[in-house]
Image (tube, rainbow, N blue to C red; front, side, top):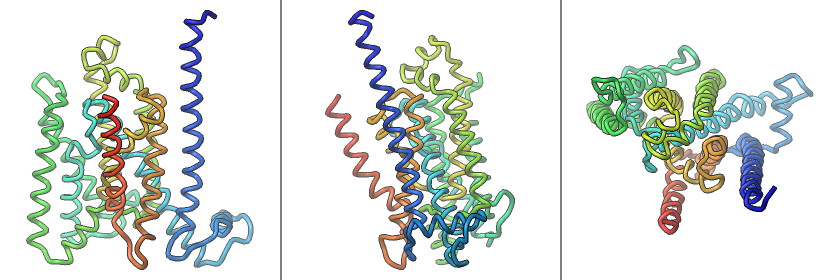
Length: 355
């Protein structure tokens, strides 16, 4: 092999090793973080106690007492796993929307999902709904999901031209319009209600995974897994969009079909996660930029790292939310904003310096 051809080969080899190294480190860190998330709380437990509790519930060993097992298995473990799933899902959706729109400020709520979901949740709360329904969804979560899907369909209707072409510019403007309209309706319902309604609405809109149990974890896992598979299958398509629509078409990408599939799966995933955990900001905005700094822009390497970093961020944000203030729990969006804003500013400054 000649020197000119050997140099690119070595560069590709280093890139693969770098990606594999980051993936391995992040995967191990996520496992340890989930274990720490189960152990840390108002009643701190050792990792050994956590392992014995889980093993006891599985019928392995003597386990621990009923109260400890209930805390570990029924309360903390599904909460930590939900945080990891929500973080991974939102980060993947943010990556997809940033790539499709070419907008580095795009996030999973670009298409008005947060406003529509909040309006559906407010209607459910106003109606006094709160019982557990199908697929482990509470009535409030079900109302949020239905409203989010309805808002998404309205945005697609606004953005689709007579020829059936899905315009990214009109899609963004339609998302802003629907989101603002739903936010106005939400404010009107809250103002006409009592103080207790306003407090419940505020708690929901600021996001939390505290109420997630095993019954609700299954649907979340299915949604995030399907999204990850579909997005990974379109990794090369997302790469081609980085050069513009014409370049993507010239590379053999079916632009319109890819848009519909990717916008649809990212939006439905966002709707499902918002319905379960409320509106959690900055994960889908900041994580893709941070992951690109680690492994570069190629989506075949970027997407797995994005999912791991998003999961890590939200697991630790949830730990901080329930431990920073003794006897009181912070909304998880407050924590992600406190972390996300400085990180995003640093990323912007680094990108500006490179430019």
